[in-house]
Amino acid sequence: MPVDEFNIISRMLHLNNLETEIARGQEGYDPWCKVRVMLDTVNQKSKLHYIPSQNLSIDESMIGMKNRTVFIQYMPNKRHARFGLKKFELCDSNGYVNHLEIYAGKELDTRHDEGQAFGVVQRLMTQGHFLNKGYHLYTDNFYTKPKIAEYLYQNRTVLTGTVRGNSKGLPQGINQKLGVGEAKFWRLFDTDMLALSFREKKSQNKPVLLISTNHDATLEEKIIRGKTKTKPSAIFDYNKFMGGVDISDKQICHYASERSTRRYWKKIFQNLLDISVLNSWIIFCLHSGRKMDRDKYLIEVVEALCEGHERVPTPQPVEQLPAQHCLVLLEGKKEKDCYVCSNRSKDKKSSRGRSRSRYWCPACQVGCHQKCAPQLEHVTNQASGIDVCAPENSDNQATPQNDIDKDGEDLALAVVNDDISDLIVQESSASQSDDSNSLGLEGAEPMERSLSCGSWVVAMFPGKKGQKKFLGTILQQDGQEAQVKFARQVGDHFIWPTVEDTSWMPLYALVAIEAPDLDAREHMFLTAEAKKMFNS
Image 1 (spheres, helix red, strand yellow):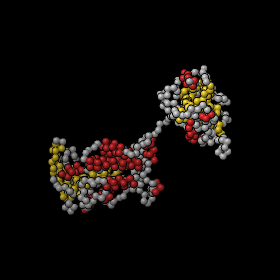
Image 2 (spheres, helix red, strand yellow):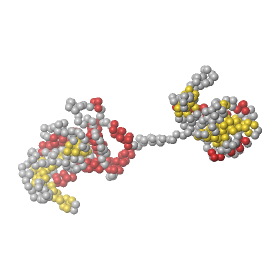
Image 3 (cartoon, helix red, strand yellow):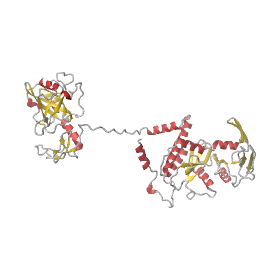
Image 4 (cartoon, helix red, strand yellow):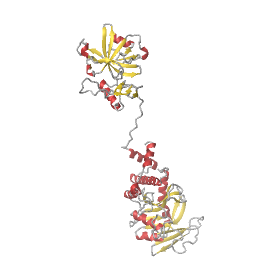
């Protein structure tokens, strides 16, 4: 696709109907109405074509931008985009985005009685249809609250996540200092929730606090990078399954389709498009059984979408040939009969009368109205009876221009107004006849300005045994030169000579027009070879 066409489509792109859009401040206003249809479609299709694993995670993400909009948020811990639109995403542990919502700000956000974190977890799990199915949810310390864990546990969903030390419902003494490698556990029997604190490194001033409704108070040993690590099993699982949103952001950031734009909703559209392609790549890798690089997958997706929709190549401009029709304004007040619509026939029934035009075609040497120009080529070709642009192939070449003998005898030409193509035959068995009147040449008139490519002409040449007549057609004309193809007279007909007929050479005779006189017949000088041909 050309760059200009892509820019036009991008500039005219819209995802909603502006006529039905509800203005800000009115009842029913949707801050994401410009992308609501696509946002709902992505959420619906993401759950339709993929069943996630048991381990899910909820975290924040950003659509990087600095547009002038009230929805811009600032998150300093997001390295790929600190300014932009905030998203809450529910992802699988492999980075597959199952459901997402965009944060519109404090004023337009739907607040929950238990706080924003409780509302986000409840909406994502409810709208994603993941409650009461035995899923295991991992969250960071913003979303992890004892009340949220209790709510999910009642809906047959377990929770594991880091928690802040000032959260309500935590056991006393959970914030006390610990030694390096030391861990402490608490069990809340009313909610079957495990709380733990663990200090891994000496550089940690405060221990890591975590609650879980799925783990027990056990320590595990694992070899990581050649070193044996001893941690609670809940910590190992949290580090393994919590990074789904971060994996998604990392994959999208490497091959993002985002482009600079002033419209914030186009950034959302581009991000949703990237999420859709990322989800499809994950599904492809799972079902195909092979790991394909994401850049190669993107190329194959683009090629597959383009199949069956190949762009018709734009024809290159063709240089204008001398034989093409081009209307030119006549000098002064001169006029010419229109070749298309003018008719001076003596038959009053078929005559349409005289029709003059200030324009003419120099290639055809005829007048023509501008409105009749589209029909001019068709009419002239029909009158000539031959293809004026495609002469027959022949091994005989035209005589060069510098071989023209201007000291020779004159060749008088006359134009045949009627169609005499039926006189041309391809047989050599035509009957012999000396009656020149039977050749249908009575309509021959002196040439004036009607000399053009494709015109039928009769050549009267004064030979040694009297005047001879030859029928021909003008194949090409360039300035004061013309290329004429002559036929051979056999009885009542004329025959185009073939290549094998060496007695009639050459097939094409190059002639030159000398100072055309508008009131007299045109005179042409023959080449030396053509003169021998006519004298034979």
